[in-house]
Length: 130
Image (cartoon, rainbow, N blue to C red; front, side, top):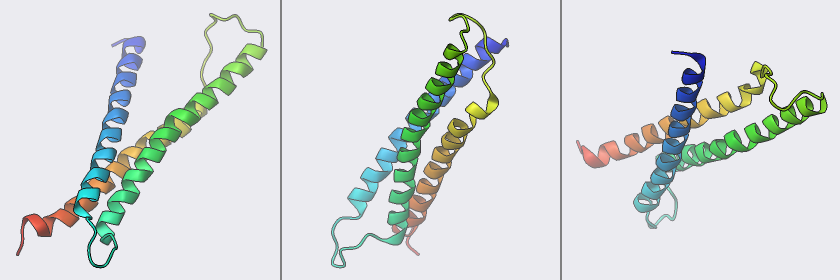
């Protein structure tokens, strides 16, 4: 597989993973909303609060992933533009420029895993009573 095909495949897969995380996050928030109907205590059970926290963190990281990356790339591109490089010239992108996006990408995925583990822990006694 050549480098161009590899990078296109990688980009496609990470975009799909981000989209799936977004849907899962909103879905888990909907499930918590349904399960945490107002009770006498007026509080959300701790495990469901964890689901909300992890899902909200995943959505926040998803936003930051794209927002921060676009700002960093704009700053880097502007710096290269000011260096009077031709528009179509090849430049090497520093690996540190990808680090925030990579950390946020993995972070939002791990948050979704945490959200669904907490949801599973909450649902287990309801689905399989002893």
